[in-house]
Amino acid sequence: MSASTEKSPPSTVDSAIKVFDTTLRDGEQSPGASLTGDEKLEIARQLRRLKVDIIEAGFPAASPGDLEAVQRIAEEVGGPGGPVIAGLARAHRGDIDQAWQAVRAAERPRIHTFLATSELHMARKLQMTPAQVVERVAEMVAYARSLCDDVEFSPEDASRSEPEFLIEVLAKAIEAGATTLNIPDTVGYGMPADYGALMARLIAETPGGGDVTWSVHCHDDLGMATANTLAGLAAGARQAEVTINGIGERAGNTSLEEVVMALATRRDSWGLGCGIDPAQLVRSSRLVESFTGLKVPANKAIVGANAFAHEAGIHQDGMLKDRRTYEIMTPADVGWDDTQLVLGKHSGRHAFQVRLRQLGFELQDEELAETFRRFKELADRKKTLTDADLLALLHEQVEGPEEIYRLCDLQVTCGRPGMPTATVRLQSADGEEAVAAEVGTGPVEAAFGAIDRIVAEPCRLLDYFVDSVTPGLDALGGVTVRIAPKGEPDSTFSGFGVDADVVVASTQAYLAAVNRMLGQRGLAVGSGVGNPAVGEIPLASPTGGGASEVPGGSQA
Ligand code: KIV
Ligand code: ZN
Image 1: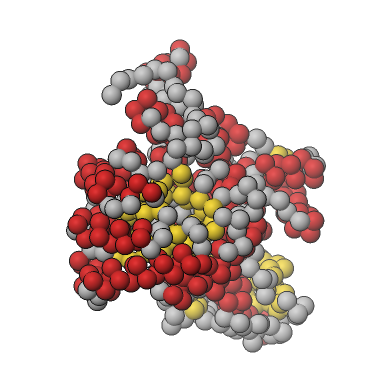
Image 2: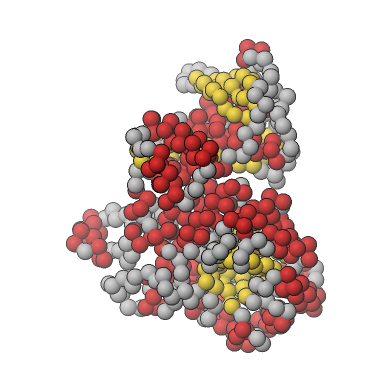
């Protein structure tokens, strides 16, 4: 490997590698990351700006919500000039029908179907014989192809499957009409040399292999996802399945930004390029971070806060003399500089709207007016608002579940000694107001408890994250919460809130999650609305008497 000091400019011309983004499908399978339909649509719009070739928009058979989200993306992002829109389907007719229903409105729809091929998965999970698997693949790929001209097939757990059997299955898939064959390293077991060799062998030995696109899909359980992806591409694959920030099942998927910048920065080594616009990388990363609540580690390559920070004196000295001494790409290449623009309380509505557009948000009149009102409210308390602040604000706005309850007032008292107490006033969608007060181990628990008293729908708090959106004492606090209805730990609902005051942000986040829970469960308003004023609702004990249970009883 030669230590080149000249940076090869990122290519936007050579599109040999197709970038298949699965942030909205495999990425959304990350523990704790569940996105609303509106959030998915916003991310899909940003993926189009980033110029990905294919968006895997979801798994339509997984839930009616997912089907609807994929449909909206197909209609609104997959129009003329847009990316291919793919929907995932198990190798079942029902799944394939739903995937087709979801993607068919796109100009270039794709059905992506999969079935496991490793002995372990076939015997233990599917309880199917290898012969049954071959037959099912042939039948379902042919069925998908009868609906859609663009069909991708994935033999799940390919890297732990017998290569001879894989070749047999893949040949059948090609015969049945598959146009892309994807080779998943489902459990992140592969090593670069083995995975690359497997890919090369499959391409060379599968009958008809020269007529299809081969694809890589890697997971990061051993931290090898990017290395394995590059090895697969070097072996002849021409599609890379990746996610923004590398989010995904367990340790995650291959990170889009790492592969794109490895190809661009070391073009001399790989001789491959793609059509991604690298200047959109940081913005895409921030949007996905904000909407999923999955924080990007500071030392994450390309998009981490420290990716271009130079701390050591000797490095700083080198940088001042010549940036190339310690930088193999510039922050501007990947869109860092652009994120530092600020707006303040004197910024007008037009400047605000232009910046939102640059961030990829096209808000309609009413939404724009509401977001601008919130922006002014925050700008009054925080001198300047950066893109990170705006994204947090937009997150709160676009996330917006149906407002079954709206927070009108919140007042807390806390400190030591004392009894943290919160009083909230909520207004329901039908205009009724209710006030309740509660005590807690802290003001946040007290506020959550007061909401529970009004809503009267028992739930359990699963996660509570508070994060400063930007550095500095006047930073906005962004809060993400996840709750589950009591007795139903598997149905979870998340909410996000942002404010200069973390107790307010926390209360907004909790109420958003509660609204989402009520909305999805078809519940209108709880019995508490219309409850008399505070004095008539007895306070619970400081260890929590509201409907929610705070894990460990501790709160911020
Ligand atoms: O990791 C995997 O095997 C998958 C397939 C469904 C493509 O995500
Ligand atoms: Zn996967």
